[in-house]
Image (cartoon, rainbow, N blue to C red):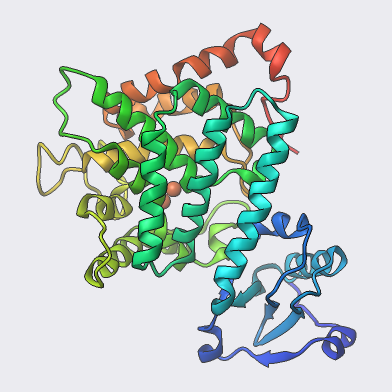
Length: 386
Ligand SMILES: [Fe+2]
Ligand SMILES: [Fe+2]
């Protein structure tokens, strides 16, 4: 049974404490545990306070310019000890400063990586940096015109750079293995989805509707926007979700769709097809997905079918999730990820889109199958459980 967390007298004396009533909590946003490692690596001080929310109190644990590894370590430790009962939060008004701070740390980590792994493609890394910045704007929630145009610019930059599939997949796969904290799910989904869309456009003879690659990449950036409404305890739960928790998790599709529709209503230019991907990216080609249990192609059935953008993003989504190390799972290498996907492909994915995706990742997968390549360059390719 989880023990109640007790705040030490020393902490009570040192910190300002605010009652965490519902109205106050609306002014705060919790920081996902995935960012903790970023905070711990922060080389600079912060201009905002970090709060520890436990039971019905908000403790101003780290004040502006007070950031230290020692304080952060005890904050993260307190969070871990308090199990599901606690959150690390900041005031919503400080979100822009927090995002800028995270961007600076991410960018300096990417720069370091460029030096330690010269084989990474610098153009792919530059585009990835831009996409990650855009993805953070999505996660922040409350999409306004400014955020939407920055997000669209990032998607357009991805497409106009015409990145090669091989370098992109290879660079991203290496990046996640070298520094898993740099892996950004929506940014990588955007990248893989954009690559699939680009490859699809080269195909002749496929009876698929017109695909706008920038809109597909944009759909990748927005697809999980509804996750801002799912509590971190569920998003980052180590181990299996209970049935109730899974029901909450599923709502990220409908809530994300609603968020994008309300952004549209307030004058933000978001294509209907892009909003639809937030709703449909967990639908499965033979049915059995959520939230509506749709199946097949929209071109074949207006009522039941799944939009082509959603069929593309759902493949990119699964691939990205498999490559990513999360609190509740280990990362797979590109070959393992594609093997897992082949097993579910006939059921879950549009076969035409999956065939194109296999072409996109084929060279990287072949490389990781090649024992010589493995030995020389990527002996650390497979992350061990531990
Ligand atoms: Fe999702
Ligand atoms: Fe996703």
